[in-house]
Length: 147
Length: 147
Image (cartoon, rainbow over all chains, first blue to last red; front, top):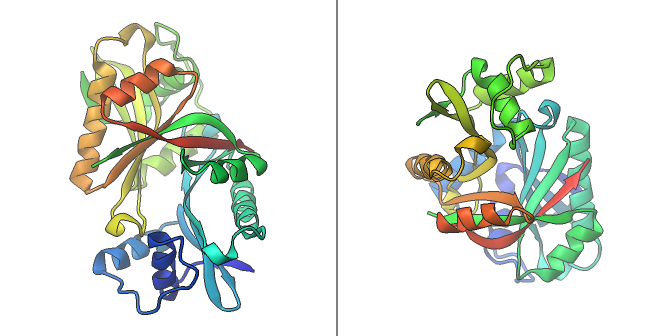
């Protein structure tokens, strides 16, 4: 499995992973609306945002987004926020998710981040065990307000 | 209470709020190390990061940091992450925190964000009630890995 920064041509496969993480095969011909194109452009041109894909046999089978956040706490170190983590359903359970997250943690260390954080839906108890096994502590409430 | 973007001269007061949110008076003469100066510069020069202060009678009595995160989910809309929320201890309980958070939610709406999110330590049950009263749902586990 190769892990790398996403390119524009990966966007349809990433959208498929984001929109339906239970499917076992990627759909072809996903339409990429202009707003999504703009969002990709915003991420791609931002040094503090990174869209990541995991590729196997030429297919995108995993993704996540990294945001490096500057702050005055912790001696001025960045924190890494991980969002939108997906592994294609037929590729789960083989350690690929762990490889992907460990890769992101290594990226955070390289940049001098002092903390890596993410939120996961409380109903996803399996995901919580997965992140706990990688060293994450469920120390916080993750609170969301939809607008 | 005035709410505005922080300037460099607000940094010592913000550090005091971040480092000790139980004190009732701001200490003077806080030393600002170079790394903190750099972090302020990084935030100040980034369109997607905003350090905010609440000011009363010429004194910084509250702060928070906003990060607007682009993403491919939710039709390509940004999400707002709120970090490092503090109200000076002697100014709590009077609705100022609510005013500050509502101001940030308004900023998120103006930018077209589809979600506002934050994490709060599970031991801060009062904070959880505070955010719930503002409409936030404690739907997620907030997981952190210190590096």
